[in-house]
Length: 67
Picture 1 (tube, rainbow, N blue to C red):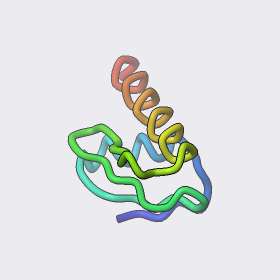
Picture 2 (cartoon, rainbow, N blue to C red; picture 1 turned 30 degrees about the vertical axis):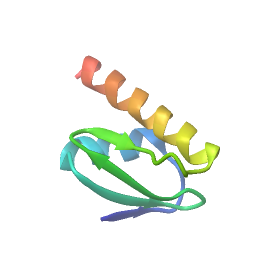
Picture 3 (cartoon, rainbow, N blue to C red; picture 1 turned 60 degrees about the horizontal axis):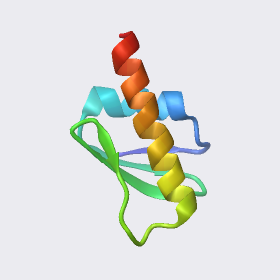
């Protein structure tokens, strides 16, 4: 588990690519879980969290294509 004091999509995606499965904490968003290289959002999560998860998953896809 890693804690991020700010929402930095590239840094968070890099961390998730390395670990593949796990949980991170982001200030103002809370706990985010990723499994098999994709971030997961629950139906009950606020819109702010769902948008962040969508952005992180896009960042994961772009970084995998560029790698």
